[in-house]
Length: 253
Length: 307
Image (cartoon, rainbow over all chains, first blue to last red; front, side):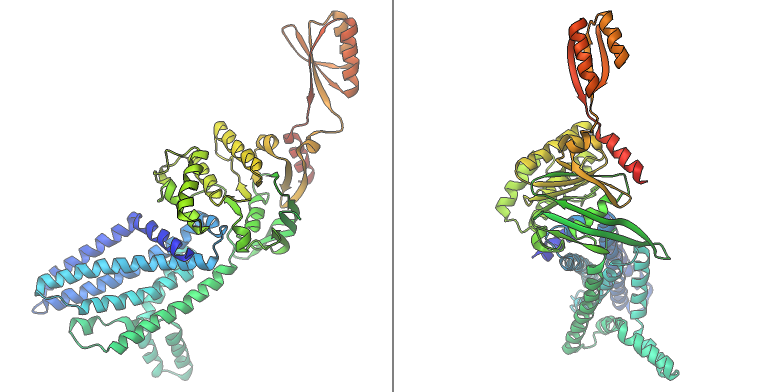
């Protein structure tokens, strides 16, 4: 109950913040301008627009998750508003879970808005509604749940600058975990151990990338979607548990 | 049992890259009794806010023990009876006054209908009834302090902790805060507030605790701290005869002469002597005023001894 109160207040906070609108307007402009890029290519007009559009949604999703997520927790501590919350009958767990829920709602709303814009673009070009795009957006949303929980983990103990750096690094490495693992297959046993370790610890974000399958209308197994959903929830749950453990012990100077 | 028991509370912070140890509060013992106004006095950086944070469970003590109503500070039951105003409050400035109070009220689980009533009466009490629909970012510093106090009272707490409630306020604002605090005491609440403005403490506190460099220096009633062993009096005499003047001058100093009135300063013994002189040798006693040592003098002498 208290989690939803904090979540809705967090949602309101971001909705009333201008930064979000700047990111969102920029994202919409980028998605629309893929039309121009599509014009440059021969024949593959629609596919270019869809592929670029989905990539833009992912990129701006990451930016919102990381920048908004980190500033959200940090601002509470920096401006000491957190004192007024945790001195009330609210546990620190509820505070973090509320913030996380609010942030995930924001990310969801933004991805939904961007996806609708892309869907419209695709419809204008092809005259058909390509529902697969929504599936790809949903996968991006699942990916962002992980990114959001990682951003909140870092901001629960680190400075905003380092948190941003760490979260962005994990996102970038996370999209290449399969490559890292394959790299280890050709190397020494010690190196293989390291690459395997990285593969299992880091989030395997390339699981969430079904852009090409969607763009080229290749079939996707429903079971795959389910597994990836479960993976996203489990991975975020582990990260969030870690955040809660750290936050519980933390002193606020 | 006292409302709050602080036993041997010590808080150390590790700062900087080398994690150098600094002691914010060192072995503090303090109890807060039911229905008193306790002023927590000390210069900046003395450890006032650290102590308050420990009472609220925002930080955990390095050593020592703190109980509120017999529970730990982290206990939700204890927290539901507490109201807290932080120092230099920066609140959620994107909320309006009413939304802000609504948010905190909901965190206490106050039922919607009651909450609306509470908010209206609180806004009135702190003089913000017209600013309820204004975003906090448009509030002045004094208004923020008031909405902060309203926020601290939203759950009708038994125990109110205010960290520097008077800082940054003009004299009128400070008087209003004093009135709110004394009003709370009348309603049976306990108030613990930190400050470095001595006159505020002198005017409203039942007891003061003085802290400096992390150590508690003194606790006591205002009267026992200010009423010293050697009381002084100011005596005002109107049109004394020259005979009277000469007699008094030999035992006391003249402080000032204003018009027909002459002011003398005297200890307990000289006081009776002077009065006798005035009565027998001519002159009119206008006033005899006891001069109490101000809290400020006590404060500086105590802090001076310890630094």
